[in-house]
Image 1 (cartoon, rainbow, N blue to C red):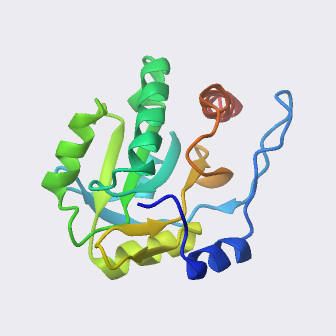
Image 2: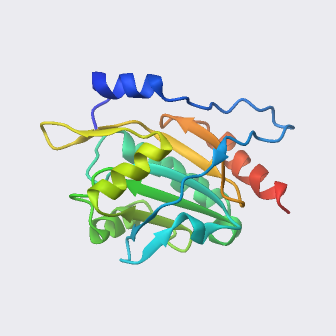
Length: 194
C-alpha cells in the first residue's frame, strides 16, 4: 500500500467515528459496542468465527500479504507483542488478521505470510474469504479498502481489541501505536474478567 489514502478513503475515514485509546492506566477501558461477528476461512482452510474466541481477548486487524509498505510494520508490531505475552498468547489472548485482498490472499498465501513473521498459529489466525464477505467485515469494523490501478490495496489501518465477552473496547488507528500500551491494554482486558 502506498503511504497515502485516496480521497474516497480519506473522506470515509474522516466520517467514521474513531474511538481513540484515552483511558488512564488505572481506569477501565470503555465499552464501544458489541463486536461484529464474522465467519471466514483461515490459513489452514478452516472456517473461523469471532464467536469461536469467546472467553479470550482478541485483537482484530486488516492486512494483505503482498503489501510492501505498512502491513509488514503492523504485522511485525503484533508479532513482537505476541512474543512478549508468553503463555497467555493463544490460551487467553488471540490475534486475527483479516486480508483486504481476498482475490490474491488464498489460505496458502496467508500461511506463508504468517510463517514469514513468526506468527504462532495456535493463537493467531489469518483469514480470507469471498470478496463480498471480506468487504462486509471490513465495513462493519470501520475499515475501508480500494484496489489501485497497480493492483495494490489502499486501506485504513484499524486494530480493534475485543474483550472476553465479545465487546469492542479499543481501536487503534494507524500502524505505529505504542507496543507497551497495546500489550498493556490486552492484559488489562484479560485481568477484568479474572
